[in-house]
Image (cartoon, rainbow, N blue to C red; front, side, top):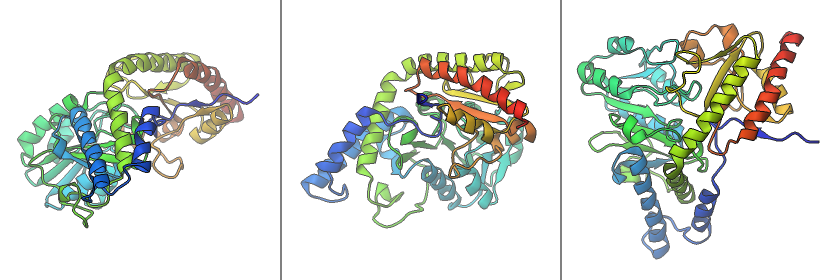
Length: 382
């Protein structure tokens, strides 16, 4: 009998919500005109896109006119970093940022700020890294590996003292599905999201650029999105993302409670069943209030992640070791390195990320499969 398929890689991408698919279809078959045009079909597409601005503005805590549509989280992050750098000054980010932020900052010769063992930004290091020359500070709201939620309000207070003219950007790609971004990211001038992280399609995202924040365009041409991001709108993708966001905002509290319980049962069960298992970014055993509900991230002693993932997939469990951003390749986690984990322990990392579609049966199967898989690898000398 073929093994059931259990998807525990929602931090990489979520299944598209049925309502999002339904909302996209008319944009492919009826309102397929170019939204930049003037005729009735173009106007219909443009109205649908503007409706999505209203939905995202509510979720992000910004004005509808602040929403800039783009191709996804990577472009949104790049636009924030490179666009801000075009104004001059120094860019700064945390050591645990997604590569879409970290690599641009490094290319620009920016400053990297460390984190503590739990993955929180070192606020003393941040203060030391800031001065009036800093034009941008980028700190992700929720980490894509550890799930840790950063204190943006505290960060903004330090910025106001040490770099008063700097913009605060937050990569909220992982956060939007789980937490009230409008509240948690209220101090941020720039906010990135990606539709496929909360039930929308891939290839579409947005950058909120609050009024008064100057971000020169990196893609120029037709002047779409108030000249901040040129290019013909991905109308079906935008509408699908908007519907997914609408459903998310209506159900997030209930989903968080349900998925949080599933995550806790999964993490606690694995820690109890597997000797030498370490849950990352916890302040004390079972204390996970500072992490998003879908994040279950562990390291196992004396195994290699790649071998473990192979065994898990054979038994129907789809997961990852770290960030899914390099064509499926497993690379050492810069997040765990920044948090002070040894290379040996980090080599045995496992990211089990739950999502809105995760079920109790998924957790049951994972708890049945993962402990013997780890034991087998240790016996084999993985």
